[in-house]
Length: 476
Image 1 (cartoon, helix red, strand yellow):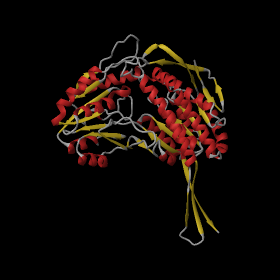
Image 2 (tube, one colour):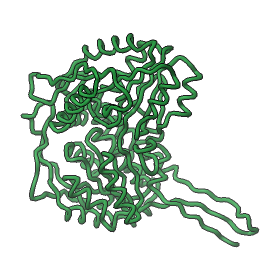
Image 3 (cartoon, rainbow, N blue to C red):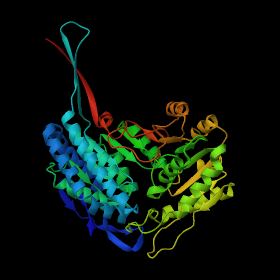
Image 4 (cartoon, rainbow, N blue to C red):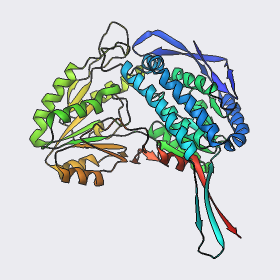
């Protein structure tokens, strides 16, 4: 199958294409994806700019109809598209189906937001003067998305961009072109005017960089690595573009002595290892009080050992493969570094299955401290560390000892500690007796410190990035 660019309402071929490989079975070529050059971005941005004016003047009903159509088809085809997602990215079939359903729910939510719109009218402090506060689209928005949620993240960027009247150029991760192509195919039949949505496939260093620096992109929404984010921030600052970024996390899960042991183990197992740990909200640092530490580690290692690692399309699989060989090598290198720094590694070996894929046993690293690289740098794999602490106060200090601040969690039976942690954890999202990963689609998503920059994603707060405010005064 060919995964092509979609520009100005037309499917376009490119001179070069690259194979899209199933990480559960590297002999399975899913399709061939366009390898675009900077000129394709120029065409896409030009198409978006030409279409932006008319779409910005579209009615709330027009926007609702388009977004509702997209959401309805995603939900109707969630099994089919979830299968593609699992085959392409490597998360389990159940997770792929659930992610596709979430993408549909996101489009449905923003269909409603298109109708809610609204502004403010108020009296001025001056007699006879009225004040109106209205919102208008930003213009042409460039969306750069990662491979780990190849359906949901393009959805939660594209849907609000369209709902608030913007034109879009989507540049997805090169590892997952199939999901982006499938989404674009649905959008192409939604009734959206030509040029309002455009898809360009290819390498980030070529197409992503051109999208960021293009003079006619008014805003950039990026999800990816902190290193790339820093480069994008510098370019957008120089060009004075509106910018929104999500750049990962090193998320702590605190387990206190008074926690329900079974609940804590399941929350940590889910947060750290599901989706192969390839979530920016994963519980990669487990901070455990001394009184429960040994029982917690014994129980968690038992649960880890029982996890079924295998082909993502096998319904018995609980943990799928790592996304590709480069990520697998990175995971293995961090396990080696952690061991050399004094950590005790349980699991973490490569696995052989009936198909040749990038299979890695989940790993737990005990006897770690905050100064170790495994606790400061994002790994992005089925790997979690354990740090032993004395009490809640020490746990909070360790939890906040990170350059990131996306998600944080605590398992405790104490309302006092839960309340204090929610107020003092340096993170944009806080969970109590829940995994750090797994969030609702109708509320804000984002973090603090090195994890996020700019307005929040998802929920009604998304309008802060995808629209701009105008204040008008009238004397009558």
